[in-house]
Image (cartoon, rainbow, N blue to C red):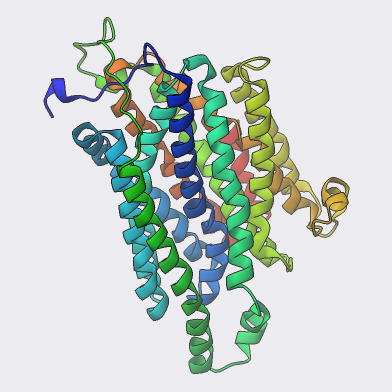
Length: 429
């Protein structure tokens, strides 16, 4: 694309408070939608493991198909945004997500795992376009030093969906799930077992059809919304003639590497907890992702209150890594039989107790909460005309969510589900 067509962002010289509030409401809605689609995977993985008769490694192809789309589609998404703008890009992303949701209908009818994976890839492709647009948008809509606070607010929308969606999925999809336990299916012949799995898979048709309708409707609303484009920024001094493009910015490259390992551990914490709980025969395994998301919401509250007033974005990042190491050690070393930790922390609220090691895995949500909000403004600082391309590079770092859970799944099949969580420690380190 020609140089003068490169989309560039800046903090507006005058940004009326009303415009910022309207923009944050619309972007908050989109973060909620992204959360619905993303954190449904934690409940979908053990569900598809039953429907398609998979082992742990095979079932985690769900995360691979979903998150690899971010790597493959990030640069095309940046090109689309340069051509159509951020507002139209958001609307187009929602429409592509709707198409992915529609693909779940033939997948559910056929119980064909490859079609489920194609549907997930399509859904995530639309999300990639959305993420490439809304993350730099929310960074650039106000002062940079408070960007982590704004992203924390958006993360609160995202993780609210992460709490609610597994609960809704469990109530709709997992009723009478004991009929589909490994022990129950083992008593049936091959034909009867396949018929029962197919019957379970067809439960997905209505919720994904409703999701598709909602996504198409919101795409139209966003297209005709009052969201404005961010004005262009002047050339960044000293960088305009570089042949390295976005790679000349070390903060961006390091940010992409940090996002790679961060998204990997976030997905492991959020999407494997249901599998792990099922392996420990936790009765409410279908809603365990909600535990992780609830802790993330608590972390976002800390970010909203403390950043930048008492905690800088850099120190928030360091504190998150240290907490992640402590909780990861707890996951691998805590008891899988006792539940004293969850009883002490959540028993007062009437939340069902879970094994201590599951509780430490859920607490990783708190450690992960401020990583994404801290990395984005730090990595995009000073990029000027390279902001759109830099955003695409950061989005490509989401590939960690495709690859690291696969490593976990392979290790869990070779050894044990609990021992495989050692993969978390070097990532946080």
